[in-house]
Amino acid sequence: MASKDRILRHKEEIKNNILEAACKIVKEEGWQGLSLRKIADAIEYTAPIIYEYFANKEAILQELTKQGYGVLNQSLMEAKNSKTDTAEQLEAMWLTYWEFAFANKEMYQLMFGVEMTTCQMMAYPEIKTPYRLVTATIMELMKDSTPSEDTICQKYYTYFSVVHGLISINLVGNGLSNEINHKILKDAISGITRSLMQN
Image (tube, rainbow, N blue to C red; front, side, top):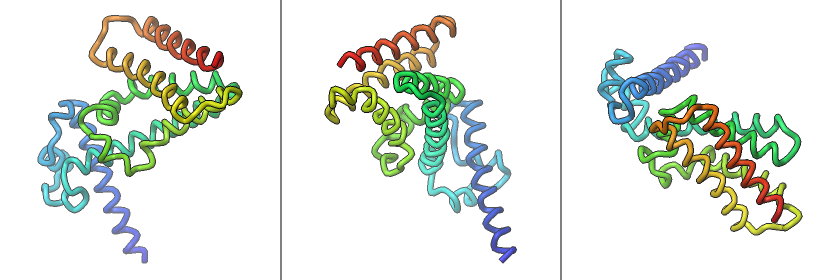
């Protein structure tokens, strides 16, 4: 039994090494620089070993995307739980989303960019968690007006469009200071939240 556990731990260690090597390559060369050959060289294994863990590069990207959502989801839940006021919960979650994007730029680009198509990833529950967390909070804030599911969805994408748009602008560099960007972000979030409370 101890031998079986050791083998499982070793396999998990190799899998993690593959993913860590992929992340390191991407930080140095970008997503376009990632290849199975480079990963194999980085972990000092042959490429066929990688195929024992991942069918192809896309499978590695899917696993990294899942992990990224896992980190984001945990951060969003902590942000929500740090506040008791519903409007403050929304602000805390979107600010956390912003912070995640810049602390994990390459991961964010993978999660929300063209590197991974949404249809491939929708089977994973991690992908849907940010939407569920935020829409539940929006619903709580708007409960007196009994909003429809379509209205809740629209409000979520209003937030998402603004926050994601500002993140995207900043990822390519817009020349504004962090302080100004943060003020723009807070203005946008609080403006949308105020409109929800008036409905």
